Figure 1 (cartoon, rainbow, N blue to C red):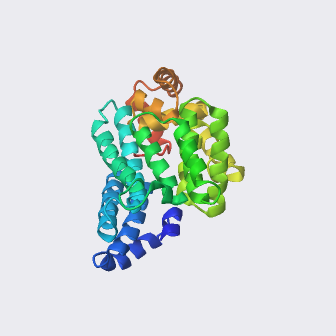
Figure 2: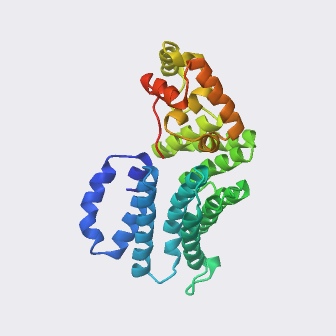
Length: 309
Protein backbone atom coordinates (compact mmCIF):
# COMPACT_ATOMS: atom_id res chain seq x y z
CA UNK A 1 0.00 0.00 0.00
CA UNK A 2 2.88 2.37 0.78
CA UNK A 3 4.34 1.82 -2.70
CA UNK A 4 0.95 2.00 -4.41
CA UNK A 5 0.20 5.34 -2.75
CA UNK A 6 3.58 6.76 -3.78
CA UNK A 7 3.08 5.60 -7.37
CA UNK A 8 -0.57 6.61 -7.60
CA UNK A 9 -1.65 3.09 -8.47
CA UNK A 10 -5.30 2.17 -8.96
CA UNK A 11 -4.63 -0.66 -6.52
CA UNK A 12 -5.00 1.88 -3.68
CA UNK A 13 -8.78 1.82 -4.13
CA UNK A 14 -8.76 -1.96 -4.34
CA UNK A 15 -6.72 -2.28 -1.18
CA UNK A 16 -8.95 0.22 0.62
CA UNK A 17 -12.05 -1.83 -0.19
CA UNK A 18 -10.34 -4.99 1.06
CA UNK A 19 -8.98 -3.38 4.24
CA UNK A 20 -12.07 -1.52 5.41
CA UNK A 21 -13.61 -4.48 7.24
CA UNK A 22 -10.37 -5.09 9.14
CA UNK A 23 -9.94 -1.42 10.01
CA UNK A 24 -13.10 -1.52 12.09
CA UNK A 25 -11.84 -4.53 14.04
CA UNK A 26 -8.16 -3.87 14.64
CA UNK A 27 -6.52 -0.62 15.77
CA UNK A 28 -3.11 -1.52 14.31
CA UNK A 29 -4.64 -2.13 10.87
CA UNK A 30 -6.54 1.14 11.06
CA UNK A 31 -3.41 3.00 12.16
CA UNK A 32 -1.26 1.76 9.28
CA UNK A 33 -3.94 1.98 6.60
CA UNK A 34 -5.41 5.34 7.66
CA UNK A 35 -1.96 6.93 7.69
CA UNK A 36 -1.37 5.87 4.11
CA UNK A 37 -4.87 6.90 3.06
CA UNK A 38 -4.08 10.33 4.52
CA UNK A 39 -1.10 10.53 2.17
CA UNK A 40 -3.23 9.31 -0.73
CA UNK A 41 -5.77 12.06 -0.04
CA UNK A 42 -2.99 14.63 0.16
CA UNK A 43 -1.45 13.64 -3.17
CA UNK A 44 -4.94 13.65 -4.71
CA UNK A 45 -5.50 17.25 -3.60
CA UNK A 46 -8.16 16.33 -1.04
CA UNK A 47 -6.70 18.43 1.76
CA UNK A 48 -9.73 18.18 4.05
CA UNK A 49 -9.69 14.41 3.58
CA UNK A 50 -5.98 14.29 4.37
CA UNK A 51 -6.47 16.16 7.65
CA UNK A 52 -9.43 13.96 8.63
CA UNK A 53 -7.52 10.77 7.84
CA UNK A 54 -4.47 12.03 9.76
CA UNK A 55 -6.60 12.67 12.84
CA UNK A 56 -8.21 9.22 12.48
CA UNK A 57 -4.71 7.74 12.36
CA UNK A 58 -3.74 9.56 15.55
CA UNK A 59 -6.90 8.29 17.24
CA UNK A 60 -6.06 4.74 16.21
CA UNK A 61 -2.48 5.24 17.39
CA UNK A 62 -3.62 6.32 20.84
CA UNK A 63 -5.99 3.36 21.06
CA UNK A 64 -3.37 0.88 19.87
CA UNK A 65 -0.36 2.17 21.83
CA UNK A 66 0.23 4.55 24.71
CA UNK A 67 -1.22 8.07 24.71
CA UNK A 68 1.13 10.64 23.20
CA UNK A 69 3.38 7.88 21.88
CA UNK A 70 5.86 8.38 19.03
CA UNK A 71 3.49 6.67 16.61
CA UNK A 72 1.50 9.94 16.37
CA UNK A 73 4.42 11.92 14.90
CA UNK A 74 4.09 10.83 11.27
CA UNK A 75 0.29 11.29 10.86
CA UNK A 76 0.54 14.65 12.62
CA UNK A 77 3.13 15.79 10.08
CA UNK A 78 0.92 14.68 7.19
CA UNK A 79 -2.03 16.60 8.60
CA UNK A 80 0.09 19.71 9.09
CA UNK A 81 1.28 19.48 5.49
CA UNK A 82 -2.32 19.58 4.25
CA UNK A 83 -3.14 22.46 6.58
CA UNK A 84 -0.02 24.25 5.35
CA UNK A 85 -1.31 24.09 1.78
CA UNK A 86 -4.71 25.36 2.88
CA UNK A 87 -3.08 28.23 4.78
CA UNK A 88 -1.01 29.18 1.73
CA UNK A 89 -4.10 29.20 -0.51
CA UNK A 90 -5.97 31.30 2.06
CA UNK A 91 -3.20 33.90 2.27
CA UNK A 92 -2.83 34.04 -1.52
CA UNK A 93 -6.56 34.67 -1.80
CA UNK A 94 -6.47 37.48 0.76
CA UNK A 95 -8.22 35.42 3.43
CA UNK A 96 -7.20 34.71 7.01
CA UNK A 97 -5.20 31.54 7.57
CA UNK A 98 -5.73 31.64 11.34
CA UNK A 99 -8.04 28.56 11.48
CA UNK A 100 -5.56 26.41 9.56
CA UNK A 101 -2.63 27.67 11.62
CA UNK A 102 -4.47 26.90 14.86
CA UNK A 103 -5.21 23.35 13.70
CA UNK A 104 -1.60 22.92 12.55
CA UNK A 105 -0.29 24.04 15.93
CA UNK A 106 -2.59 21.56 17.65
CA UNK A 107 -1.20 18.70 15.55
CA UNK A 108 2.36 19.95 16.05
CA UNK A 109 1.87 19.77 19.81
CA UNK A 110 0.76 16.16 19.44
CA UNK A 111 3.95 15.43 17.50
CA UNK A 112 6.03 17.11 20.21
CA UNK A 113 4.29 15.08 22.88
CA UNK A 114 5.07 11.96 20.87
CA UNK A 115 8.70 12.96 20.64
CA UNK A 116 8.95 13.72 24.36
CA UNK A 117 6.42 11.27 25.77
CA UNK A 118 6.06 10.06 29.31
CA UNK A 119 7.05 6.54 28.44
CA UNK A 120 10.34 7.03 26.64
CA UNK A 121 13.02 9.72 26.29
CA UNK A 122 13.41 11.58 23.01
CA UNK A 123 16.91 10.13 22.66
CA UNK A 124 15.37 6.69 22.17
CA UNK A 125 13.37 7.75 19.08
CA UNK A 126 14.83 6.36 15.85
CA UNK A 127 15.83 8.19 12.69
CA UNK A 128 12.38 7.74 11.15
CA UNK A 129 10.64 9.36 14.11
CA UNK A 130 13.17 12.19 14.36
CA UNK A 131 12.87 12.87 10.64
CA UNK A 132 9.09 13.05 10.75
CA UNK A 133 9.24 15.27 13.83
CA UNK A 134 11.57 17.66 11.98
CA UNK A 135 9.14 17.58 9.07
CA UNK A 136 6.19 18.36 11.35
CA UNK A 137 8.03 21.44 12.63
CA UNK A 138 9.00 22.52 9.10
CA UNK A 139 5.43 22.06 7.87
CA UNK A 140 4.16 24.12 10.81
CA UNK A 141 6.52 26.97 9.93
CA UNK A 142 5.31 26.74 6.31
CA UNK A 143 1.70 26.93 7.50
CA UNK A 144 2.57 30.01 9.58
CA UNK A 145 4.06 31.70 6.51
CA UNK A 146 7.71 31.22 7.44
CA UNK A 147 8.91 28.64 4.92
CA UNK A 148 12.56 28.91 5.96
CA UNK A 149 14.94 26.67 3.93
CA UNK A 150 16.88 25.93 7.11
CA UNK A 151 13.93 24.00 8.49
CA UNK A 152 13.79 21.78 5.42
CA UNK A 153 17.55 21.35 5.36
CA UNK A 154 17.24 19.92 8.86
CA UNK A 155 14.59 17.45 7.64
CA UNK A 156 16.82 16.34 4.76
CA UNK A 157 19.82 15.94 7.05
CA UNK A 158 17.82 14.05 9.69
CA UNK A 159 16.40 11.47 7.29
CA UNK A 160 19.72 11.14 5.47
CA UNK A 161 20.60 8.85 2.55
CA UNK A 162 19.11 5.75 4.17
CA UNK A 163 15.56 7.07 3.70
CA UNK A 164 15.63 7.73 -0.03
CA UNK A 165 11.94 8.48 -0.55
CA UNK A 166 11.50 10.65 2.53
CA UNK A 167 14.69 12.56 1.74
CA UNK A 168 13.49 13.16 -1.81
CA UNK A 169 10.15 14.44 -0.53
CA UNK A 170 11.98 16.74 1.85
CA UNK A 171 14.22 18.01 -0.95
CA UNK A 172 11.06 18.90 -2.89
CA UNK A 173 9.98 21.18 -0.05
CA UNK A 174 13.53 22.48 0.39
CA UNK A 175 13.67 23.41 -3.30
CA UNK A 176 10.35 25.21 -2.94
CA UNK A 177 11.55 27.15 0.11
CA UNK A 178 14.81 28.10 -1.63
CA UNK A 179 12.89 29.29 -4.69
CA UNK A 180 10.65 31.41 -2.49
CA UNK A 181 13.76 32.87 -0.85
CA UNK A 182 15.16 33.75 -4.29
CA UNK A 183 18.03 31.25 -4.21
CA UNK A 184 17.29 29.73 -7.61
CA UNK A 185 20.64 27.97 -8.07
CA UNK A 186 20.42 26.02 -4.79
CA UNK A 187 16.75 25.35 -5.42
CA UNK A 188 17.58 23.80 -8.77
CA UNK A 189 20.24 21.56 -7.22
CA UNK A 190 17.81 20.23 -4.64
CA UNK A 191 15.11 19.88 -7.29
CA UNK A 192 17.38 17.79 -9.50
CA UNK A 193 18.36 15.50 -6.62
CA UNK A 194 14.72 14.98 -5.68
CA UNK A 195 13.66 14.41 -9.30
CA UNK A 196 16.40 11.86 -9.84
CA UNK A 197 15.35 9.90 -6.76
CA UNK A 198 11.67 10.08 -7.70
CA UNK A 199 12.44 8.79 -11.20
CA UNK A 200 14.53 5.94 -9.82
CA UNK A 201 11.82 4.92 -7.35
CA UNK A 202 8.93 5.34 -9.75
CA UNK A 203 7.38 7.78 -7.28
CA UNK A 204 5.00 9.24 -9.85
CA UNK A 205 3.14 11.56 -7.50
CA UNK A 206 6.28 13.13 -6.11
CA UNK A 207 7.59 13.46 -9.66
CA UNK A 208 4.39 15.24 -10.69
CA UNK A 209 4.71 17.62 -7.75
CA UNK A 210 8.32 18.29 -8.72
CA UNK A 211 7.31 18.88 -12.33
CA UNK A 212 4.76 21.44 -11.16
CA UNK A 213 7.31 23.18 -8.96
CA UNK A 214 9.95 23.03 -11.68
CA UNK A 215 7.60 24.69 -14.14
CA UNK A 216 6.36 27.39 -11.77
CA UNK A 217 9.80 28.25 -10.40
CA UNK A 218 11.64 27.49 -13.66
CA UNK A 219 13.84 24.87 -12.07
CA UNK A 220 13.54 22.13 -14.67
CA UNK A 221 11.22 20.35 -17.12
CA UNK A 222 8.50 17.95 -16.18
CA UNK A 223 8.57 14.28 -17.16
CA UNK A 224 8.38 13.78 -20.91
CA UNK A 225 9.05 17.45 -21.58
CA UNK A 226 11.93 16.80 -23.98
CA UNK A 227 12.27 15.28 -27.43
CA UNK A 228 9.47 14.64 -29.87
CA UNK A 229 6.64 15.20 -27.36
CA UNK A 230 7.90 18.67 -26.51
CA UNK A 231 8.41 19.57 -30.19
CA UNK A 232 4.92 18.37 -31.02
CA UNK A 233 3.53 20.47 -28.17
CA UNK A 234 5.32 23.57 -29.44
CA UNK A 235 4.01 22.99 -32.96
CA UNK A 236 0.46 22.69 -31.63
CA UNK A 237 0.80 25.98 -29.75
CA UNK A 238 2.24 27.72 -32.81
CA UNK A 239 -0.96 26.99 -34.72
CA UNK A 240 -3.01 28.93 -32.17
CA UNK A 241 -3.22 32.59 -31.07
CA UNK A 242 -1.23 31.55 -28.01
CA UNK A 243 1.91 31.25 -30.14
CA UNK A 244 2.43 34.98 -29.60
CA UNK A 245 2.89 34.46 -25.86
CA UNK A 246 6.13 33.73 -24.06
CA UNK A 247 6.43 30.65 -21.86
CA UNK A 248 5.92 32.76 -18.73
CA UNK A 249 2.90 34.52 -20.23
CA UNK A 250 1.39 31.12 -20.96
CA UNK A 251 1.84 30.18 -17.30
CA UNK A 252 0.17 33.42 -16.20
CA UNK A 253 -2.66 32.86 -18.70
CA UNK A 254 -3.20 29.31 -17.43
CA UNK A 255 -3.53 30.59 -13.86
CA UNK A 256 -5.71 33.50 -14.98
CA UNK A 257 -8.01 31.09 -16.82
CA UNK A 258 -8.34 29.08 -13.61
CA UNK A 259 -9.73 32.19 -11.91
CA UNK A 260 -6.62 33.18 -9.95
CA UNK A 261 -6.16 36.78 -8.83
CA UNK A 262 -2.88 38.60 -9.51
CA UNK A 263 -1.83 38.00 -5.92
CA UNK A 264 -2.59 34.28 -6.18
CA UNK A 265 -0.73 34.02 -9.50
CA UNK A 266 2.28 35.77 -7.96
CA UNK A 267 2.42 33.28 -5.09
CA UNK A 268 2.04 30.33 -7.45
CA UNK A 269 4.75 31.45 -9.89
CA UNK A 270 7.21 32.91 -7.36
CA UNK A 271 7.02 36.42 -8.84
CA UNK A 272 5.65 39.76 -7.63
CA UNK A 273 2.07 40.91 -8.14
CA UNK A 274 3.44 43.89 -10.09
CA UNK A 275 5.20 41.53 -12.50
CA UNK A 276 1.95 39.58 -12.89
CA UNK A 277 0.13 42.80 -13.75
CA UNK A 278 2.66 43.52 -16.49
CA UNK A 279 2.29 39.98 -17.87
CA UNK A 280 -1.51 40.27 -17.87
CA UNK A 281 -1.36 43.57 -19.77
CA UNK A 282 0.95 41.99 -22.35
CA UNK A 283 -1.32 38.95 -22.67
CA UNK A 284 -4.41 41.07 -23.27
CA UNK A 285 -2.57 43.13 -25.90
CA UNK A 286 -1.16 40.11 -27.74
CA UNK A 287 -4.48 38.24 -27.76
CA UNK A 288 -6.52 41.34 -28.59
CA UNK A 289 -8.63 40.63 -25.53
CA UNK A 290 -10.58 43.41 -23.85
CA UNK A 291 -10.68 41.75 -20.43
CA UNK A 292 -9.37 38.91 -18.30
CA UNK A 293 -12.62 37.06 -18.96
CA UNK A 294 -12.12 37.28 -22.71
CA UNK A 295 -8.48 36.19 -22.37
CA UNK A 296 -9.63 33.19 -20.30
CA UNK A 297 -12.17 32.28 -22.98
CA UNK A 298 -9.45 32.39 -25.63
CA UNK A 299 -7.26 30.20 -23.44
CA UNK A 300 -9.99 27.60 -22.95
CA UNK A 301 -10.83 27.68 -26.63
CA UNK A 302 -7.23 26.89 -27.51
CA UNK A 303 -6.73 23.97 -25.19
CA UNK A 304 -5.20 25.64 -22.13
CA UNK A 305 -5.77 23.25 -19.23
CA UNK A 306 -6.39 24.77 -15.82
CA UNK A 307 -5.51 23.41 -12.40
CA UNK A 308 -7.73 23.43 -9.35
CA UNK A 309 -6.21 23.55 -5.88
